[in-house]
Amino acid sequence: MSELEFPTREEILPPRDRWLSMKRGFAGKCPHCGNGAMFGRYLKVNPNCASCGEDLSHHRADDLPAYIVLFIVGHIVIGTLMSTDPEGVWPLWIHMVIWPLMTLILSLALLQPVKGAVVGLQWALRMHGFGGDDT
Image (cartoon, rainbow, N blue to C red; front, top):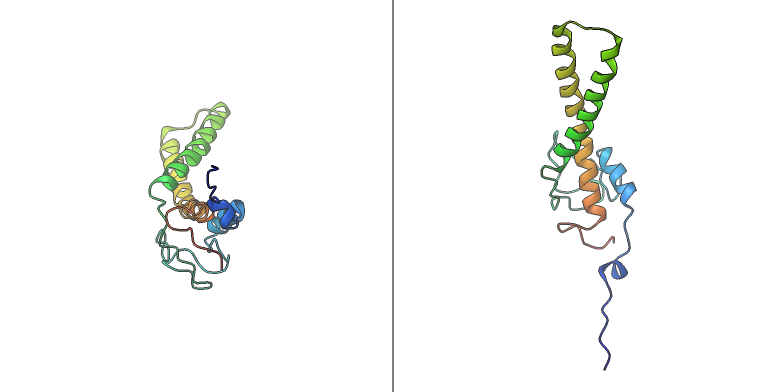
């Protein structure tokens, strides 16, 4: 007696392009169509795409975007700080102005695009309820 083999989820539903959906999310666009805006406010994901109607309320980005931004900004700021050290001794007040300001600006600039990319990846992998068909 042979076992019944059931098709996997990937065999039933067509695969979604991960990089394209992450790129669309990074740009703040819907990962499905690439036209509608993903964000209604700074970090608030719209429940549905205004262009194609894709349900985006399933996302669970949580703290991952903040951790990724922390990793990226930390490497940029510390790398820049270390590379400016051999150039000469700067007064302490310059360090206290430049590095926190650079950290703040980079963090605020990257947080929304990174969250969009994470939501795009979740959509492409059909995580957290994004498993519907592409019709």
